[in-house]
Length: 274
Image (cartoon, rainbow, N blue to C red):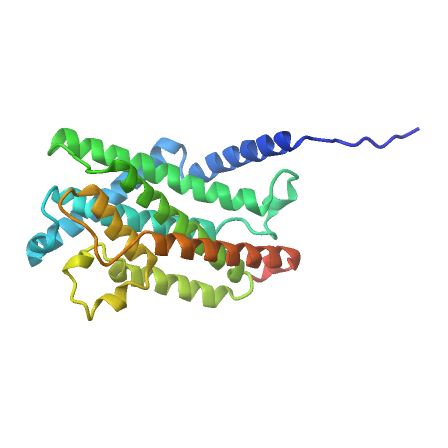
């Protein structure tokens, strides 16, 4: 009387379904804290402008403009601030993405991969649009914006986002086991990058004895390499893009293994403990 039916789907259908679910989840992430996506982008623009204004006045008062690269000073500030903000906000969003014990996982198409991907893409979208808006404002209201090699600069922007994704996956996988420890470690990492990301100075101007204090940080390499692509008269000698790229691939492998192990041992009671 009753016959079971099998819903067979092709690989292409599964891929398209994944992208569809990820798209809707990304839209939900963008609109989660705000009524609409435009407001979320506007707040990202305002936040970035506040950072730029704060560093502009700080450098002006302390005489820090003398260590900047010759060229558009606002581009010098933006190259550090936007890459830093993109990296940190991506890390936070991915780290706080819905895990295996979330109520959202009760819906059939939803899984942790969709949750992580949508969280990461929502930050990339808002930060990229905010970056274009601020560049347009500077170009039309202050002075023309000239970027020496924009594909390379865009690549470093995406690489900073990617490193934030992989570190966020690691923190996400550890958070359900050690929530307090991970909260402290993530806060220390974010605070340390206020200095060790190198957004306030360039690697070529640093003394050799100070370089090892900063070169461990992938974000330091990314910001310095981005400035090499943005400014025609700056060639980075002490950093490279390969180090953050390959270390991100290693962290991605570790993070996915950790997330898989956590998902396999997930318990519904964990949600009540946090």
